[in-house]
Image (cartoon, rainbow, N blue to C red; front, side):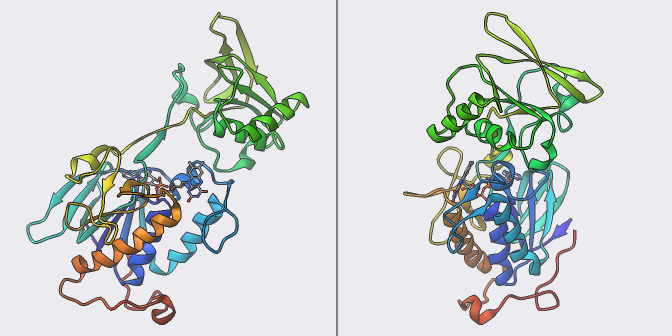
Length: 344
Ligand SMILES: Cc1cc2nc3c(=O)[nH]c(=O)nc-3n(C[C@H](O)[C@H](O)[C@H](O)COP(=O)(O)OP(=O)(O)OC[C@H]3O[C@@H](n4cnc5c(N)ncnc54)[C@H](O)[C@@H]3O)c2cc1C
């Protein structure tokens, strides 16, 4: 059983910043995420895309934002429990909660901050035989490191932004890029779709339309080809080292919806002044938090994380007055100061 002050659910940008805000108020945190990496949507969906609306950063990529947040929270030594979803919640008789994850990790905490975004998300998988044999070796749903695909023969499936963006971005370094889509029209933005067609006309990308995925060919987890077919049954075998399937994500709040926290579908309603939900001691911030006129932006989530941490203080240190201080006055508590370091 891990005892700590605040359990943060979700290691997306907002969950990471919640670690910082809690740390500044000398509250210890542990963080759980269903993914096996930190960074939420920024890391999983658009690590290399520039973000333009983070205050004081005219432009930085999803990956850079997450790296910066990790550096910012480093003084607080947060402990991450990755690759596991939170499941059971028990209210303790004298306040506080016990939480158990899908891997059996147990926490006893005084407050909970839910920064779960759209829920524990996973890719929509194509219905192909032997798919699991190739996942992670020849079939991918995210690009976390572009370099991994240098010199490879790539088949990219899908017709939306991710498929088109990555086809364009990887055409620079891949041996070949073939884009499989069941229609001739793509759903990406007009500018990127135009760029895709330019590259196709220049022979740098082949558009395999209207085809859909039919089979995976290879041996012992090494992909060698992707079978595709039209609705009329015309088949082709595309030589490939990797299939990048971008059919969107399905996300699911899962067991969190059984915790008695209320809100409109897929969100938890909060009082924006405090971040608190209808369950005392449970807070929500970031994309998962809702209230009238909510803007689902990273900067909004950062402010909600600050509100949540300030109200959570009352649960962590009952009866102790919280005197508001700017960081320029308080400084950042560092290792060896009053902050108690977390241990896994
Ligand atoms: C392509 C794209 C471009 C974008 N561009 C911008 C932009 O320019 N500016 C901007 O402000 N925003 C942008 N956004 C939106 C931005 O990414 C989100 O607002 C932001 O990621 C929300 O952060 P979050 O921490 O609340 O949630 P998320 O980033 O979604 O992270 C939530 C994390 O919680 C985890 N989780 C969920 N449920 C559980 C559970 N039960 N147990 C354990 N872990 C769980 C998930 O696995 C996930 O890692 C963009 C989004 C996309 C998809």
